[in-house]
Image (cartoon, rainbow, N blue to C red; front, side, top):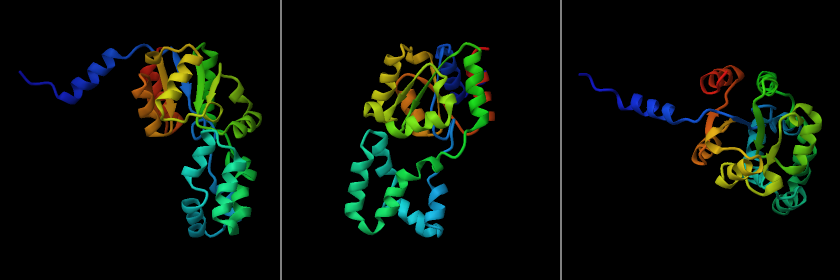
Length: 219
């Protein structure tokens, strides 16, 4: 008889061991709302190459993620201004112009989240976000107040994909990890959730998310 391909067996075995999804957990940035620091900085530094260099060497992703971990903006700005005093105004602009970076909601995925809540699913959010900017985001986008709750990295001092943030979220909202479905735009954060015993999918657009939910979540 013909042998069954190992890849098929692995997928079959995984599908057989998945727990029914009872908790749906959304990331926020680039899943529910847009985030792009180039929006305000395209006005402040019109030259694209110069702007990219600024983000690669001054206000880097690694610098910004520490605010998501809980570092204050005052400390963050002082650190960079000490190293780049000639860029002081641009460094301060990163926080001052933050609202322009979160320019719009992703209506398709927001509609999906609200539909799930209306259908009675348990929906929470788990996000890498500075504590103060998240408060502003909730005022800008009131739908962020609708899910049952949220874990904000800047409030607890831990960021995705650290295992502790997934465990903290599950404990805070009494979630069974194996029955959680996490939705995130970062593969490393998806992998972190899976390592914590969750189910997880990579968000790319609302159409794919609907297909993933149809496949994984009981109607």
